[in-house]
Image (cartoon, rainbow, N blue to C red; front, side, top):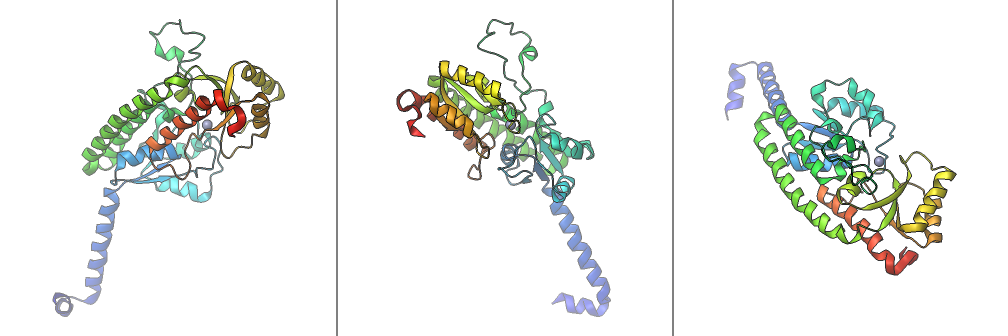
Length: 317
Ligand SMILES: [Zn+2]
């Protein structure tokens, strides 16, 4: 073949250098073609997967068992943040532990979704102040950072990500844009499905474990009475628990716990009041493989706990 004969003409070291150079060159072009996206939490990674469609590598920083509000970063996590072409996170309002490490990265390497202008925000107190003016939407917003729990926001995030990925890998830009559009279309359908499914349970009162569902609750018009704790790390005080008990005794049907949080006092309260106990997971467990699945499971959790409550009481727990 050609190679041994070339060895006659060129010194072997030259050939070796040339081969190494060719190899490095091809590695570099492969890396450029597939940007590495590191999502802080699973829901953002699920959205990123839809946009990437195989043209970008998606990785998730936090394990699903970790709290998105508070997480001790390891040395290896800091390395993963630096090595990513793009870090996708909500913002300091949720993953406060990422604010400092991300501040040291170049701005074009970070996509902060909390600040996206097109996001939808829950209306405050939609039960008590239904008469307040609607002309200035921004006055009625709460800053709940669990923005992905409104499917319209997932579309906003997908489009922003497609734009940023196109800057990083222009050769796949058309694909990213198309994927984001297709995903957005599927979300319209998912949204309509959830709206229809949840309609019958809208008037039924419940409490959630932490104040992280207002995007879902407000968008689908559900009747949340209270939350147990503002963030999962904070333990509720005795006074708050008493208030919670009073409001649940009056019109509560269901109490939602969360995986990975011990809430035996809440469980006892639900049992003593004869309420259903449900489980909500805002980020999705290991089995959840798509954004649609995450949202469908959430919808099912609300439906099961609320729809059953009239007949079965606490018995189904
Ligand atoms: Zn949360």
